[in-house]
Length: 243
Image 1: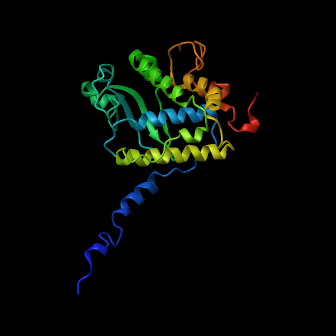
Image 2: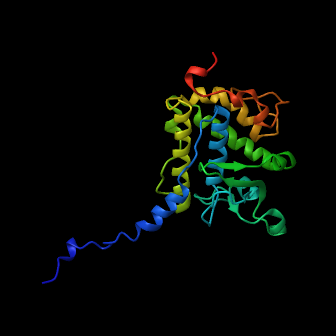
Image 3: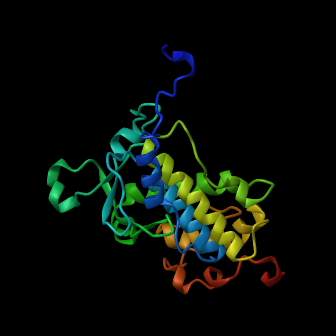
């Protein structure tokens, strides 16, 4: 007597789950620490920018990558629906030569806490077109966070529509920043209040051009380094906020 095929398990050993679990184990956040508003916003901006890029490989913690933007296609709006014009590559600008896939924003690394570190200061200082593009992205980023409600609700999570590795990295990034909020005692921190405390520091770290007047504008002579920005060390915890 044969078994009923309608009740048969097509994957009795769960083999399809093994690589997914292994990849998530490699990409889950570790050592997520409390962060100031500036550091939190900078990590969120840099990481979401990297995750928006086309990536044909599995990122490895500590490996040096390079982030490129095809500005010609971006400015001409010659992009597919799922193409942002950004690309993550293992190949440096010197190695690409004239075949580079765009303007290089700089090297970047995936940290153990699943946030990305992006060294963009040199490129932003030297490339006005790239600087203008990043300025527009920062402004859009700040406007999207300028909403009522907790910051935690605005953090990334698992998105089925993303490519496989970007899906895992987005989930890891969201989990990491939620852990950082919890470590700072600020799980209920409001998005607008975090902007008030950290937006100027994000602009100093991410931009070299003067900013237009507005709620998130900074002085023209502001330093590029968050290490020299007093707001970078200001805690996010409610009890430590200054009036």
